[in-house]
Length: 600
Image (tube, rainbow, N blue to C red; front, side, top):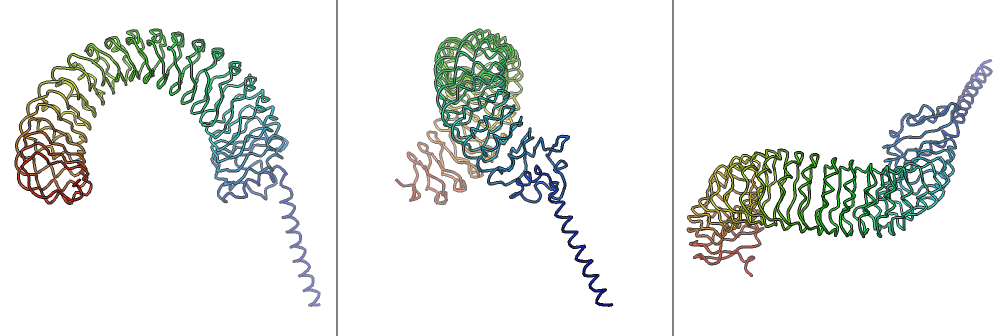
């Protein structure tokens, strides 16, 4: 009886075990084939990547990133920014025959794109961007006749852009930028009549000409081909792109003229043609672009004048035609651009005076006119530019005085009037500019003294007043400029002593006052300038000994004290200055040894 009881118990346990295994087996088996295909994505992913993907569930429809049809088929797989850690894209995904949306962007996937993805014939969106995919773009993707959005950008793809993509007549966005694609742009892409965005830039090995056939893409709103090796001319057919909003062809080998036909692209807001080999003149037809906000043509070989018609681009906020070979005068009509925030005309051959009408550009933040052939005086109306932050005029032939109205430009942080023919004194009003960090006036014929009011410019980082005719004493109030890094006063007529108060500027890296009429001893307090890298007090009349404390300047790499009246012995403390590479103590009355490593 006992034996029978034991056998029954064993049988019951065996029956229970078998049924549990059977039920478990049936549960796993009940997962749909779509679910099984999806699980192939998890083979290398950490368990925390997709915790809701339960392999024991009967359907994947409740999993994160999964959308199913009423029939239970997976129609959307969207798990961007998921750390899948895949060495290759699983070909099993090709069995998701009802899939319409596939987004695996930014998911740490490498390997190649499976050609079998061409079997996903219902696919409307394919986004594999921002991964580490290699290999070529499969020709088979040309079978995806329902595809509307293709994002393969920001990978490591090589090979050519397949002309088979021209079969995707429903395609609206094609992004293959920022890869290593080579070859030419297929002219067949001109048949993608639904295309709105075509982005092929950032492929440094992409060569050949821009196909004129792309001018047939009349729905195109964005064309990007920057940072490629494309050459040839910009097709005149681009004038047919009436809906184009952004044209980005910069940093390429494109040459020839800017097509006047671009003036017919009435919706254009951004025209980026900088850093090319473009020549000829700026087409006045660009003045028809009423919606244009950014016009960047810098870094080409454009010639001729700046068309006055540009002033009709009433929405313009950025105009940059710098680093060309433009000539003629600055059009006074540019003053009509009241929305303009940045005007870059530097490094050209512009002549004439600065039109006072520029002061009507009330939104102007940056005005760069440097490295031209401008003359005349600085218009006093510049003080009306209340939003002006940067005004660069260096390297011209502008004369007259510095307008005191600069003091009204309360947002100004950079003022560079160097290398001109300016005369008169430095207006006290400039020192009311509390945000001014760069004041560069070197290489003019300025006279008078440096006002103690300079201490009000508490934001000053660079003060360069060299190569003028400034005189009087160097104000001790300079010591209150605690943010000053560069103090450049050389080749003036400053006299008197060097204020010891300068030692309070502990962030100072450069102090250059050579070729003045300074006298008295070199202040020992200069040894407190612990960040000083260059000290040049040569060609003055300093007397006495070289302060021992100079040896404390451990970052100093240049020390020039030649042509003074210094006496005594060379301090032994200089021997410990390990970063010192230039030491000039000549033409003084000094004695002692120069550190051996500095002896030539």
